[in-house]
Image (cartoon, rainbow, N blue to C red; front, top):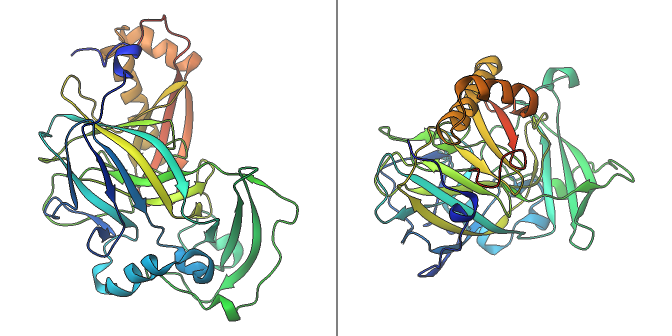
Length: 358
């Protein structure tokens, strides 16, 4: 198997042949699923730039702050019975000309800009410590400060019952608003919680669990300046984005991040010169592989095996050397524990290799 490429070759400028705008409209989104039979919302050539709108399904937690007319239109026109089996509003899919199973889709995320200056965090019934809080659900609304790149809690309220309907719109204008996190500032780091290609299956696949197609990875490092590599599974790849966040910690422990709509500028490049079996993340200083399974131990093992493969097959290290290097230089982390299929990741720094590494 060939190397991924040398760093300066792989990250070389690729001149786009076109710039596309993909608005989030009822016609251009699909709610809660990936589906290889979904008609594309946009067709692009390799190297094209796309400016796409990603809408949070939590906008209804503070409708006066987080929902404009276009977002209201999505919530009103897509019926509840068509928001399944998952929960996320996905923009796309994007058909990439020439993409075939066995190829890789390289997506360079150039820019992620909040649609508005507000976001919501829900301590949900699927959160890791839900029972510790008496099975109570709580919403915290955050305000973003673009100048300081921080967020502060604006207010919080307890959600009655269980938050189960995708696209819930609360009556917070009459709720009991409470002070929260007085004096605390949270760094803003916009990223996509969910993005990926269509899996090669029959019918809909939920957006909730992550998988080899990508999906709900919930890695906060998938933001501006990062590049993701997704293994293509169907003709055209059928790439979609959604579940936008403005901040999240590893684990996503309460069940959600600070959920907030984003405008995303990305370049989509078709790669036929290498293959990797799972979503691979490249940042300025590291490569990060991901593992998924309902059992976190198995997810961690899957990530470890893929890091071993990355070092052995794409960097030319022996398996023995790769194993040693992983133990002394790679960082293992828990990506999320709240999406039924749990996620682990392994990060290897790039500056430990000779200049002609990856």
